[in-house]
Every structure is written in C-alpha cells, then in structure tokens.
Length: 203
Image (cartoon, rainbow, N blue to C red; front, top):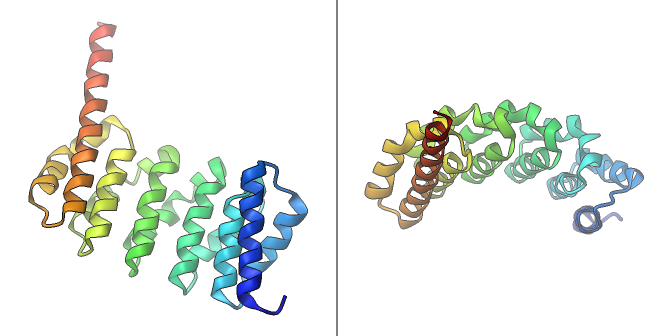
C-alpha cells in the first residue's frame, strides 16, 4: 500500500496477531522486517514494534533492529529498545547499546531504555551505576523511571542505592518521583531482608 500510515498499521497489527497467537510465521516476520528500512519513520517504528512482538522470529532480525537504536527519529529508537527486549536472551547481548540510550537527548527514549534494562537479565543489571546517575535528570518522568529501574533490577547489590532512593523519596518536588523512589526502596529492602534470612538459615 502506498500510504505510509496504512503500512505502519499493518506492520503493527501483524506483530500483535503473532503475539496473541504465540505462533509467528517466519515469512510474515521477513516481510515486516523489510519495512524496517522504510524511508517513513512511522513505518520503520511500526515495523520494529511489530517485530518485537514476534519473539524468536524477531531474534532472526535482531541486527536490523539494533541498527535502529541509532535512528535519527526518537520514536523509532524507542520502538527499537522495546523490540530488543522482545528478542529474549539474544536481546540481552545489546544491553550496552540500550544503556547508551539512557543518556539520549529525548526523555521518552531515556525512559524506554530505563524500562528495558531490568528486562535484559544480568547484562542489563550490570548497568545499575549508569542508571542511578539519572536520579539527577531534569525530567521528573526520567527520575521516576530511574528509581523504578533500580527497584526492578532485584539484585542484592541494589541496596547500595537505598540511601539515594530514600533521599529522592523524601525530597523530590514531584510526587510521581517520590512514589517511584519509595516503591523501589521498599522492594530493595525486602530483597535485602530475604538475603539476610537466607544467610541465617545457611549458618
């Protein structure tokens, strides 16, 4: 179809259908992947978003998806981040590239990257220090996403960030940030307590 928005809708719908049926078709994934290089950003973004819903079939096109992490359009970069997560274990190999986007000029890209890293396994959790640096971001939405990511990493090492999260929960001027920091701190304390109980049981 010559209409970009129609093509974009078709790409995304194909991805949604594959996700719902849990049975992506390789030939369809290939056709959608062909649109990743489309000149229209709406089509590129929708194609990447559609691929990201296709699980293993998305992984077959992960190099195309990864290239879009450097797209000039923020919407496309955001869709690429989500698609990387959709590629499962193979997507974890790109945790470093996703982390780089936590410092993107566009807040929505930073938020997408922060939300993705905790879903990229141990490789994503390895960037907790870089994530924590965004507690000072100018955007309250980014600060909230940063706090949530630190809580979502669910690693004992995350307790290192409890003082900073506690301070954020008490002092940030935005409620959305305070709430996110409070929830993250609570999750990390619970994890720390469980780890302590496990150590006691082992003795």
